[in-house]
Image (cartoon, rainbow, N blue to C red; front, side):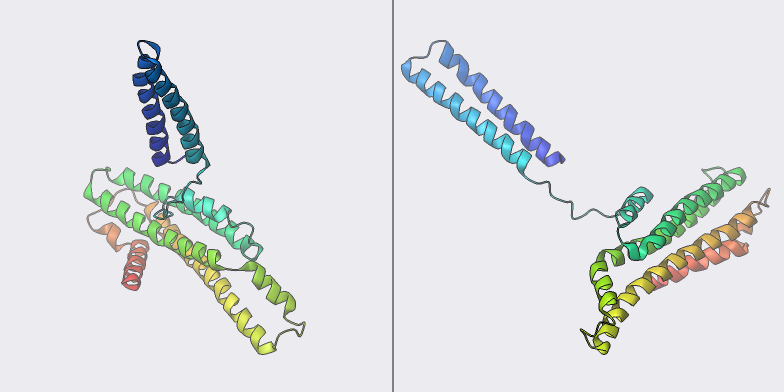
Length: 242
């Protein structure tokens, strides 16, 4: 139950209870016939209102939050699992889930290595931690795009078209146009998954370089080929978004 509904429910029940606490003493102790009649009617109506109000609040369907956005890795995992019924992308979904696990593992190792070289309070650590966070954003931006495409993909229609492709029920030209549209979905999703593999490869290169370091001179990390590749990736993505 959402918080707004809980507040309404609590307010309704407390309000009715408070009203009855005020009215009941008048009915039971010192009320005349008119007061008793009024009190009895009030108790009946408040009881009916309480039952109806609670029913409406419980029966009313909860509204989806339109501002909800997928942010944490767990949300992406849950969303991908919700698309497992799409047989067209079954293998890709397995790959994406594996990619998320590998990304988290690699980034944890990178941060652990950096903490052996810098303290968490040093600007150098904060800078490179920010770089890794930017890489994570790009990675999950690709997955978000994939999920959006999966949401729009009509698998039933796609399978229907494939089944009817050689039936002669539709012209060959029309069937080719339909298949072309769905192939664009499929190719986009495959390309985005491959982009994420490229990101993981760049992190592997960076890990290889970092794991051989015992100490770092000022500016050395920025000049490492692995870090240069990642920095270029961030710049390219930023330019693309702009």
